[in-house]
Amino acid sequence: MIKSRPEVFDAYWELAAERQRIFYRRLHQMPSPWTEDEILLKYRFCNAFRASDRVSQYHIRRVVYGEHLSREPEDVIFRCLLFRFFNSISTWELLERLYGDPRLSNFDVGRWYKDMDVGQGLFNAAYMTCGVKVFGYDKKHGNYLALVKSMVDDGLVERILGAADFAAVYGLLHPYKLVGKFLAYQIATDINYSDAVDFDDNTFTMAGPGAVRGINKVFADTDGRSPEYLIQWMRARQEEEFNKRGVPEGIATLWGHRLQAIDIQNMFCETDKYSRVRFPGVGGEKQKKPKQSFRVAPGPVPAPFYPPKWGINEKSLTLPQVEAIKDPDEDLPWFMG
Image (cartoon, rainbow, N blue to C red; front, side, top):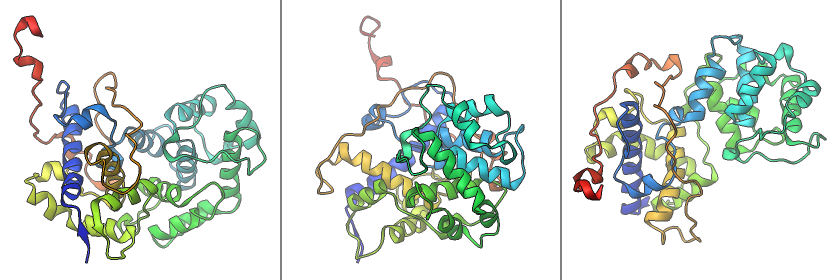
């Protein structure tokens, strides 16, 4: 029988709801602080919905649906591969400065390798891409450009377009050098944001290392179930669990779009980070505090943009109601402020 640790299980759902409230408070352009949770004030945590995170928003708006870019399905998939391997907004902007519309017809590994060697960091370490010289290039970016070329030459793009389901896309990506299980899952999700394919991404999931750690903290006994089973188990329970905690529909969902398997997986990873501070004795391993501190980005949060096939972009023009957080300094006498 599956048995949770009640305090961590509750924290999972509370974290998902509070992270959504923070997201909406920022969209309302409310002044900080956006939460009373001291852990969320101190450390950086991803949004409850992966598609709302800054890099995913950039990917959806600019890389997949950019108005100046080719909408040919083959080019869309090519861009998804290229962007996620570097996982860096500044690198994509470099490619656009160099080539305007990065597409299959102007992709040349040798030329791009030289053009991209500009002395700036080209990779975001979020998915810890490997730097092994498996394709013979001295610099990491050359090996990833060569990887993309090997995929294109191997007919991967066409095979993705002909895939039967979401799991099949993952299965096509996973065997390639430098692509592990978790990265293959992320790329498959990125591609499924596009209109090149249209699969139910809840039919397959893959737990990353952080999610596995989170699962081991949320559950005292998994009854021998796989991490992927438990991700789907939590996904099926979300409406019930949010209702139990009095979380309204407007906070529990993204304008009616419920947490998907990828989001549930991500929230296990975030719960792992959160538990290191709130429940440091849980999990049976040496606990390290989260690596990244929370820093307020300058300027307002842009209005979000989601895959049009989700049907929520017009709905997102109306923001859910959420209470503002009162700054505790407001209650201080003027001479103590």
